[in-house]
Every structure is written in C-alpha cells, then in structure tokens.
Length: 94
Image (cartoon, one colour):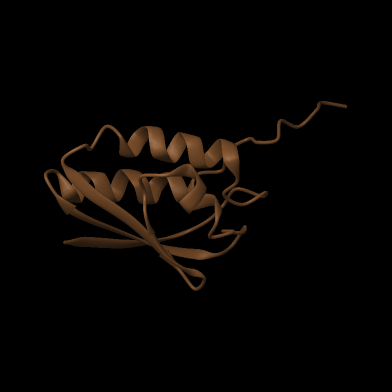
C-alpha cells in the first residue's frame, strides 16, 4: 500500500469538474484500488458522487491511498491532481 498527502489548491475545491478529471485518471489504473481520506471520511475513488460527497474544500489536506499494480505511480498521479489548480470555473479577462 502506498499513501501520500496533498493540499487542495483549486479555489472552488473538488467539485464536479475536478472530480471528473480525477476519476478519469483513476480509470487508467484499473488494477489498482485507489481511495481518498479527509476529515469528513474516506471513499474509494470509483464514483463521482462518492468523491463529491466529501465536500473537499480549498486548502484541505487529503490522503490518497493506493494498493495494487503500479500503486506508487497511481498514488503520485492522483495526489498531484488533488494539488492541481484547475481553472474551474473559468475566469473572465477584464
């Protein structure tokens, strides 16, 4: 099992669009069990609704856990996505 922590950098937290991006990447590691833990609970990353239900906000620390094939790469990749600043919603230029 591999475990890494990440601080959420997306200003709007982990809502629908970032959740979708994270789960799409999780699908690339089909032989690896991937989960995320927060102070609000922990879920396996196989459902967008389960991820959104955690209500992960900007600045919150999450722990990504992986177990299986390519678990180190999977953990690092998914933790990086939680720490990524998605540009959602898009900002208008003035």
